[in-house]
Image (cartoon, rainbow over all chains, first blue to last red; front, top):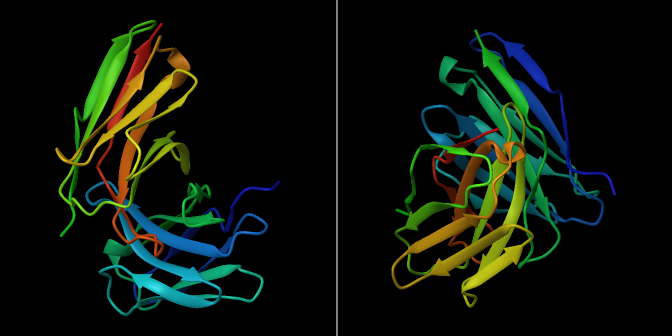
Length: 112
Length: 113
């Protein structure tokens, strides 16, 4: 069974641009969540999607948004990039309420 | 606001030693708690998941405990090996079925041959 796949693996953008990250969950998993990881703040929850609906959202500005498609694949978008958005963005999927989260390898975003 | 604290921030041990990593959390309404391992530049690998109704979980050389009343969890690693070297993170879920994990900053473990 293939794991959680995130693309691209690395991204370099400049301030003010926007970026879209993609996540394909494990087959059969309907829940996809996104996390931001930085050396200073550690791992922080961004949002979770289930069956195309956002169920939970972390404390991030509106520049951060996401969506989920009918095949459970998810995208995350960050608009008007700031230097502080440089981070490792991790996507995770799970199959049920009491099940473990499975993480992808992440997308390393650098904002110059 | 939920907070998760992990102590120590870094730990270096000789191969073969048994060790304990600590995690404390502030939210008594915890739904479950997970321990993860992260290798440099990689994503997270789930090690153990403990439901709020459970006291411990075991997988191979790993044993995780959960004490809701004291707000603490421990990860015990038996007979440590150099391949165990990684950052270990604990995360509590207080969002119920709407999964929302709050992570600690992690413990960087180095096992020396």
